[in-house]
Image 1: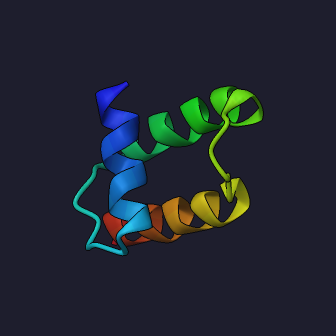
Image 2: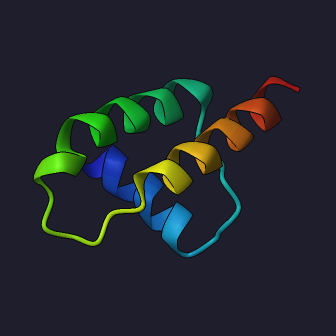
Length: 60
């Protein structure tokens, strides 16, 4: 999924997040669905934390 990959790339490169709240929520849902089956070294909890921090920025 290109949107999920874009959010993950932004997270992994510690770039400024310009994604909407809707996009971040989608990425979190998709991560939850695919992380257990991914062969990548996954740090899902840290990814969720980053998304929630950026959700807060989007709101305010």
